[in-house]
Structure formats: structure tokens, C-alpha cells
Image (cartoon, rainbow over all chains, first blue to last red):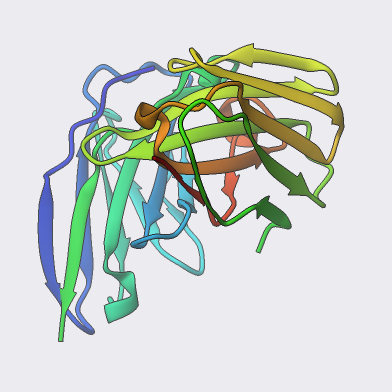
Length: 111
Length: 115
């Protein structure tokens, strides 16, 4: 699975969009990009995933560049409850049993 | 929310004692996982299961064993607990193994302290 690189921390004002970047320059054609988050003391929570096209669900949008070397997770209207560590993971089929989560980005939403 | 229940939620025990953590799911998912989370290390996979009686090791499996006698239950056992196994343990489930089917859903965790 491709290595991903994320900033250690980011801040965002409540009500504004939070844009979390992820670099995955060695991603292969059959690797998906997954995003998870972990709110303090809770289990990780699935947010969204994508392969090539941009994706949107009730939680967030995922923008993947045309060359697939990077992606951005967008929380359109961040709230205080979105303060969490966000993990970007590149994953291909059949190999994830060895998967480990990296250190992610700590997003702090400020009032 | 996915139906995943971990028990106990908190446990304090002594070095050398056996400990069993239970993960119960109501989703009928094939794959189940045990992770541990420690400061500075993120989530690390201990063991996983790809069906009843089918299990395999993750990256930090030493000192741990698992069993899965039913689809819904995945047990993690510390045969002789050590202080280095003090951690937060998470169970996860998924329908598939990779790609679009890999979405994992996690339990609320078990905080284990070994004195």
C-alpha cells in the first residue's frame, strides 16, 4: 500500500470549510483512498473513500487530483464536534490485513 | 452505527494473569480485527479473522492469541498479561478485504491497565 503524508495539525474556524490535504505520490492504479477520523477516546470512524472520481456523502467531500498523487478531504461547515485526528489511507484489494494507520492530522475547530 | 460491542469497556488486572477481551457484532460481517492504540504509535493490527476458525497475525501479535468460534464473536486473549500490554484495544469489522469493500467499523474500545 502506498505511503501517505499528512500535516501534523491544522486549525479551522467553526462554520468554515475545513480542507485536509493528503499526499500519496506512489499510489497505484488499483489503490483506493480512504479517510477515517478519531474523536478523542472513541473508536475510529469511517468518513469517505474514492478511487478516481470526486466523492461526496453526508459527512464530507473527497477531491482526488487527476494524477491521483494527492487528495483533499473537505468538511463543508466544520463544527466543534469535528475536532479529531483525521487519517488518510491508500489501500488496494486483498492486502489490507497488514494495514496500519499512520499518525494523521489533528484538526482543531475553534469557536 | 454498526452493531459492535466490546466487553469489558475497562479492566485493571495484575501482571501474569490471563485476560480475555470480547468483540461481538450483529452485522454478519466476515472480517474482524483487533487493534491496539498507544500514544505515539497510532493504531496497530494485532490479529484478524477472515471467517469462523480462520485467523492470522498482524504486526504486533506476540503475546496475544485469538479465537473465532462463531461469526459474531472474536475473542482476544492475553495468556499472561504484561505491563507493556497496557493499552486501548479496538475491535473492527468489515464486509470485505480491501478496495471498496474494506470499510471498517470500530467498536468503542477497551481500556486495559496491567499493574
